[in-house]
Amino acid sequence: MAAFRAEFAAFLDAHLPAEAEARDRSRSSAHVPDWARRWQRTLFDEGWLLPGQPAEFGGRDATLPQQLAHLEELAHRRIYHSFNPQGLGIIAASLITFGTAEQKRRWAVPILRAEITAALGMSEPEAGSDLASLRTRAVLDGDTFTVDGQKIWTSGAHDADVVLAFVRTDPDAPKHKGISALLIPTATEGVVRRPFGSIAAEDDLDFNEVFLTDVRVPRENLVGPLHEGWRVANGSLGHERTLLWLSFAERLEDLVQDAADVGAGEEWYATLLMDLQALRLLGYRQLGPGRDPAELSVLKLLGSEAVQSASLHALEAHGADALPHPARTGPYHHMNNEAFISSWFERYARSFAGTIAGGTSEIQRNIVAERILGLPR
Image (cartoon, rainbow, N blue to C red; front, side):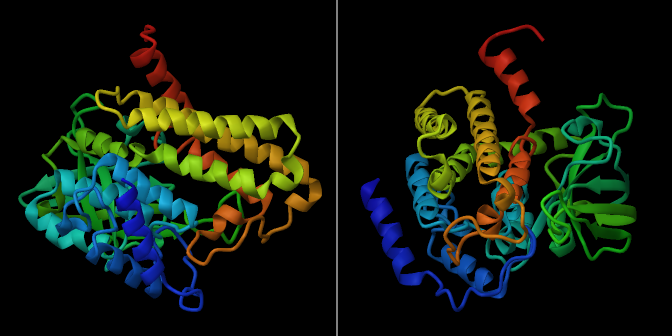
């Protein structure tokens, strides 16, 4: 693994974009500036985008420990992997797993090469964490679906070229059944996207409402079998969760460095250091053979809540100085996402996404209770 890490480090030294080239910054999780598109294509072409995938999908068939080394090297240098994280880590990965050969050619590879960007349409006004309660309907007539409904919290939708949307195709089936996954190009007639600000700032335009009215989608855009979207959804979140704990470890590492001026000697700071160590050790153990996938819920729960707790302590420790926006609370790295070093208030506010996205803390506790501890439902 040391040789693998050294090879990747040498690649970064030779190919990393210069700071002057990377001045144009991303405005949402589906807005990828031109320089970042070129950089992502370079990673793809050299097999360093998703090392665990075969070469045709931007990888080199790397082992799981090698994939970990790859992500750790990026984190060490504070390099944001892709400015379209859901497109890369969830949607393209889901297409590789569930898509047809044509869908992989037409959609997955262009997303991986940053030729197009993608957003994930799961949550709805009455179906946030409970995907099975979704109401957006798709009626199949011949070779065309007609889609009607609404999605919300759809990150980057206003900048995305396509949305992977989960829709109900059999209204009479039990709620976990009768769901399908459709690729819906955002330029399709009847698709309306409305970005809105977040708790972090009014100008933080990433979340979207997406309205779908008589949207016509060809059957060839169906991902996986008809009515089997629940399996696709679980696979999508599975792609997101496998090494998700590492992103929380990165945020904890950032906090250790960036909050040292007010944390050193404080009990909460010592807890931060211990949480980081515990998360890494548990994460490394998960890489071993025969581990229960339910243990990922332990990592998600520990990591997301540790980041939130430490961010709150850092916010309180800095007092009024933590509130002005915009602000910078960590060292600037031109390949990083500025949200990670924004004001202490914004860093704390953004920590709530970690306890919600990919399955809320409540859901993770249920999984731990039922599947690990064996408690009754």
